[in-house]
Image (tube, rainbow over all chains, first blue to last red; front, top):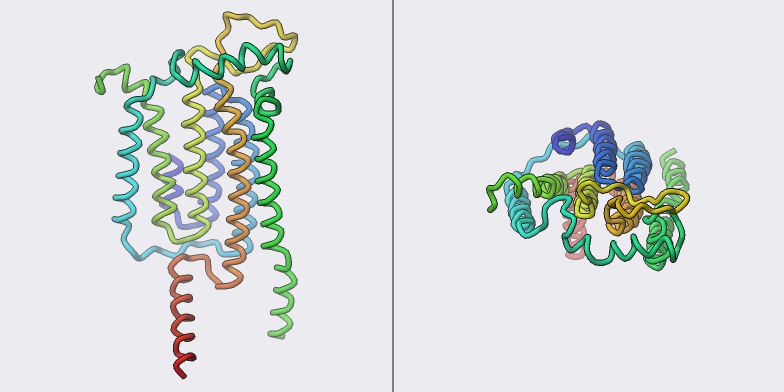
Length: 170
Length: 137
């Protein structure tokens, strides 16, 4: 699939574009699996924002990947070992779409039956996100805030330092 | 039991997502370019998201959104909304970490002049050699 192409390409611009295509395709898959909220977040954030971020990073750094010299045998072995372990783990999982798997029988029914009376928002995902799991969302905003501050701290003064080094040279 | 058609079709989605996950992990481990490592990390992340959502899917179900007038028809099956909520949070956190990683890459490029893994370790080894030489002298 697209991910394999992204593995092979060495031209970074193409890789970033393929990553965007991959996000968009995964958003389509998410729609098929009834997760519309997640799908449009993925389309906006994964295909939109992260592509823009990567393109701007590329503009600040380089556009071509150097060819790799060392062999990847160890990596391939480790990855396939982990993959086999995970595959073994899925053998105990319920079938796709099964109605009485553990994930479906406990909390979700509670949310689906109670949220119309308790919250009164048509979209159950919104009701859980903002109300039942409000603290989770608060933590998420804290993480995003920290990351934003980190990015600003890392990149602030970039232009200033560049000007300083230019004036040294000139 | 493993080779029954029903079992294979019911687990094919998990297996596909695990293959995607491993592709992302392989990119992270084997490729030296730092931007490409971030792309690999993103692929890994997205496949985990899809794995979660596929757990919450109910066959014949629909998106967990009630009609506007809240007249809920009990015969309609809804998919599990809980994984959707968790993954919404995870996507936003994921983009935050991606942004932080890319900012780090910009700084690394500023300090070392390259974004290749091996060249960075070469430069560091050189610097260490110089340091020990100056200490000896």
